[in-house]
Image (cartoon, rainbow, N blue to C red; front, top):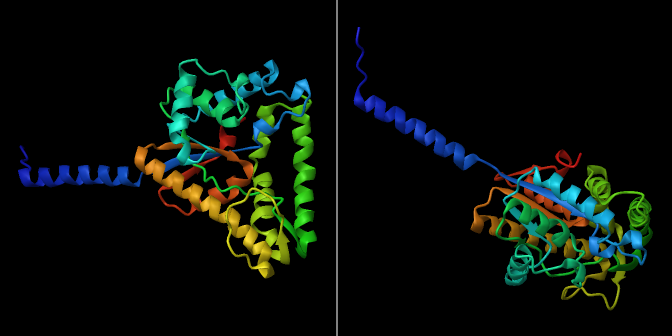
Length: 288
């Protein structure tokens, strides 16, 4: 028995399949991975074992880069302001051609070069994207106030955890690979996030330090000096968030890897968790 399906029915069925596929593509989330660093250009303390360009540490950085390469990002964002994108492009292009030796470069130990550029070259990426905001902030900005000791106690707790680890890297008893993996453990990210975005709110009737390279902060309400401190940090990270969003929108990339100082990671993750277009991928999935 031959069954004839009307042409109109077939057409509607095909349209349904096409629309379903388009809808699925529209809902496909952008993958984003944040990797927090203790800035590598601040690692050197005068000892040979703390030198990022030693054979041992270069091998550790290659191991770290190889692990992150398994994520296969098509976008690498680094801690430079978008105003410097043309410089970033020029330097990265020279690096790809073998015309840059970062060992001889003033800030050549930066993780954006040691890991970001190396990873970009390994994956055949044409650009490294500058997504920072140039407004600088410092944990030393908060100087005094009522309940200032609560903030200082939190700072000392973080330092008591992080400083011995950094010293272990500097004396070669811990690898950079293991250090960066530990820096991205949720517990340590939460500790840093709590220090910067929670504890300072206790501090009132205080002052900021003088002579620090901070943004033009305008008029400050010293009664809420701790809240003002949080505002500065949050404002900078909101602008970083905007830079990432708009650079992704412009490039259309789908697998982003963002490399920043570890203090930025908690707040950036919070912002992207609330964005339905994004899915956060933990670096610990690849840093075994």
